[in-house]
Image (cartoon, rainbow, N blue to C red):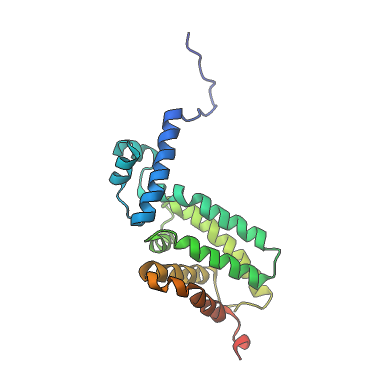
Amino acid sequence: MPIESRPGKPRAPRTDAQRNRDRILEVAAEAVAEQGTLASLREIARRAGIGLGTLYRHFPNRDALLEALLHRRFTHLAERADALAATPPERALAEWLYEFTLDAGAYQGLPATLMATLNDPQSPLHTVCLTMRQAGGRLLEAAQEAGRIRPDVAPIDLFALANALSWIADQAPTLTERREHLFRLVMDGLRPRSDHD
């Protein structure tokens, strides 16, 4: 006699379904690292040894797949902001922002994808990006209250500047080695004008 499941209790994913999901993410991470955020979903399914329909059952669109790939990375950034809150405000902001530029440049095409999520609350990436941006915004506010960052800098400015640094490295890999210099220039521009006199 079959055992009935208890009503109201969510069923755990079947072992083969979880295995497929894990395999898709493993292959997708490799494909996106090689080809960027526009890597072929059909090719990812082929490499994972599944049908395209199976991939879409797990990830209904490209952004959903990217969200799964980036979720851990961006959740870590949000948590990192909380951990850095105990350090001097400007240093905390600089460390967090630099980590963000590295993460945003993890995959070719990612900086442009992240900027696109700003005005698309329907994107699966929107929520995880918003959480990360809010975490950075708290560090920005603390640095501004300490008088270390210009008061006219908004969280969206910070996000756009960091993303621009990642985009430069994405578009011109030869500039990747100049990332730290470019980052210092950005930080200099964020400081109050009196700091430059």
